[in-house]
Image 1 (tube, rainbow over the protein chains, first blue to last red):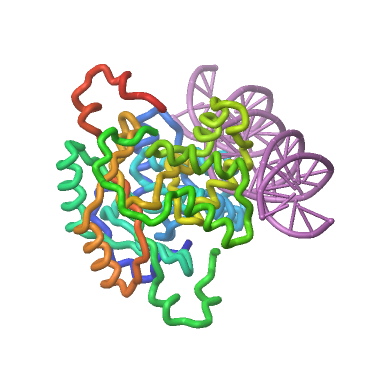
Image 2: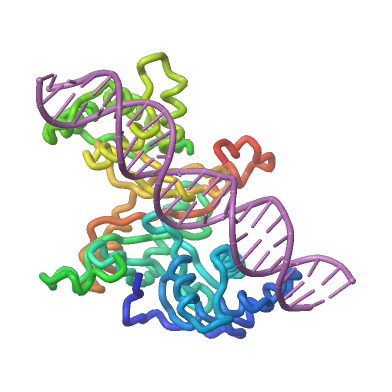
Length: 168
Length: 168
DNA sequence: TTGTCTGCAAACACTTTGCACTTTT
DNA sequence: AAAAGTGCAAAGTGTTTGCAGACAA
């Protein structure tokens, strides 16, 4: 699940690093800053990519001694990071996919059914329409999830699609 | 998972009933029109509601002799109905939820986090924006899924929320 | 020291599959 | 009769949990 190479939605200024924010979150709840939790946040923030729990687990296993964590710990820590507002979780094809949330603007995705790539975009018009529709149903919108399915230009132009089928 | 009581997006005229269309679909593929398949399509089309496989299985079990089907058959038949274009499948909170597709206009959902109700709506503006965004990324959109999360008016006005917590 | 966290193995929920038997065509 | 479908039980997949030992505060 690679992220579009050109990630054009810029970072937003934030006071603390993700790692600091997580530490703060843990301490505020009487939770402990363990080696595993540190290793996981650091690793997750070393790449701006969409990933799932198993990928993260594998990545950590390929890493030097003392920088990995067990499957249950990975799952538990990802859930905590979502609670902490660091990560955003979405479900795609039956498995949970995570992406950076803290410090990045709200956005939606184009999902290429050819190469499974997720391309990020954001649209103010979309949010406006969302709120107008919600209002007309006397519904108070707190968020939304939009995934536009289709075919990206690479998959459309290349006859030899093999190059685009990473991570299928 | 109840559907909004006032389903205001009208039916669309279609040449065949869902059951006829399914029969046609099966025959075209050399598949057989069995008692179970008939029972399932008929039951699914007797209510316009969102449902999942286990609910359907339970409903069928509560039904007179000779009008039920096993779990594997229910799953297999639902998949066929999706292939046939009769049902639309979406994944919500980890399980597959189905809704009528054949004969109904494309639409999206408001999802109340208070009572888990799905309210249907459709918006031409939304589709326009979707296509504009896609075009700007040289992406060819073939479809989309939008779920707006929030609180419905019932959950907002009632202090005694218990009444709205069916199916939680 | 005290209470939380970790990792293991086992449990989970939902869905799919292998296979002998039944049913439609 | 031939081919496809069904139901059972068992296997999968992704994720969660109970618990004894390990570790942060």
